[in-house]
Image (cartoon, rainbow, N blue to C red; front, side):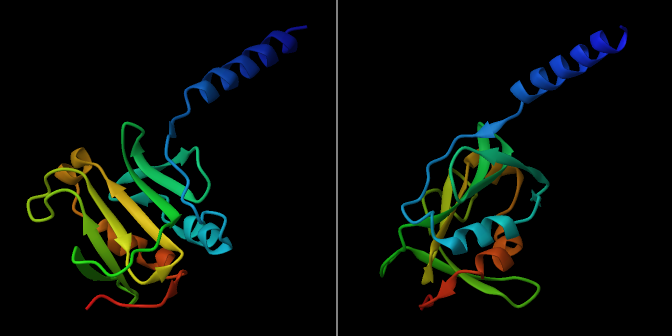
Length: 159
């Protein structure tokens, strides 16, 4: 008879812990059902800039950090057309080069939120970095995302 209370206690503990699991709320991109997005998300690192991966509530997304201040990657966002926004090429150690358009925030002083959207890749990938994370971590995290994002098809490059 002692096993039943122990099993009940264990089950109750698991339910309580599951209720504490953190999910980062985000929005699905319009082309999130593209099969390449699944490859991209599954290929991202478990840790990014020292922040652990967190579950999200939308398809083709992943996040790192605390829900209220998380780095959020969304695959299948609207591809960018020609733009005058700052476009930078980030090369990973393995030679993978990804072009990113930087919008929002002050990129020189790491002030404010920033959004990095792939340029010339389909499906497009977006990485949102909140101001609080930018103050503590550099955006060199884009280097670590390069191999995963390289699974998308390159069609154009930054000039």
